[in-house]
Image 1 (cartoon, helix red, strand yellow):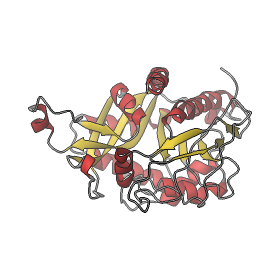
Image 2 (cartoon, helix red, strand yellow; image 1 turned 90 degrees about the horizontal axis):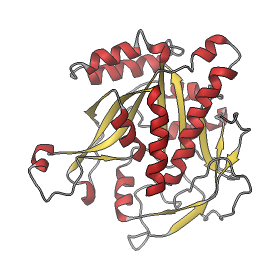
Image 3 (tube, rainbow, N blue to C red; image 1 turned 90 degrees about the vertical axis):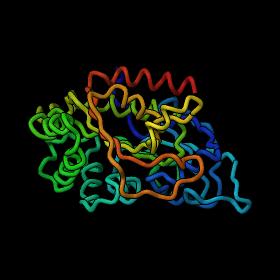
Image 4 (cartoon, helix red, strand yellow; image 1 turned 60 degrees about the vertical axis):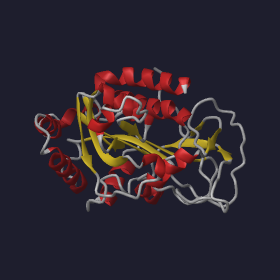
Length: 321
């Protein structure tokens, strides 16, 4: 495996296209897009073959439309990978603003943990953009290493509370958050709604490569061991059909039982050891395309041994799309 490259890195530009259904999901998305400059970002092909690229959306906030009510344009921009740094605090906090729905918790402390862990974790920005808005974040935090932090205590309590009605799952979750926490990574992956899917494989490759490198390169045995994950626990968001039983009775129904906001979550869900859903307290008015769905939280546990399969299937999914 190649060693950790020096940051920052870039990939080629990708266009972003706004479809009516994409706009509908964007309106309901829990992640807020950092405000961008009003001018378009010029597309230029980078010389580096390694790295990350993202395409910012139009300057308008998510859910807004052009003067004629429809924006079907394409915007191109170069995106780059960076190690987290203190100056990223507000951008990362914006991405994570509704990570735990509307619960009151120590989000600022959680962001601090993410930014302090520079060996494992990636933030994605527009190349050479003075605003330095954060468009994506991927990291993994050891739940035992940070067990005394207020934000982690609150997060664990919330997870257990949501699982309390799930027979069997609650006990398994309690074990992972407790006696096995030293081998458990909280996988945090947040991004703007319209991130190009072509960026997903390099984003996750970067994360899992860094986890592997950290088991060899961290300065102490304790730190090296803190990245020897056996399980990943993750929280995400899906849209679940309001009437699944009625849907199954309709042979002509083309609607899916679950709509995954992030395509990789479908792979994680399939590979998970266990999972459960819970209703979110923030239920925004649904656009027409999502009228039969409601937003739900999804908590999953995935064995670390399944990550190579995940990476392979994610690459195939994106290449085929």
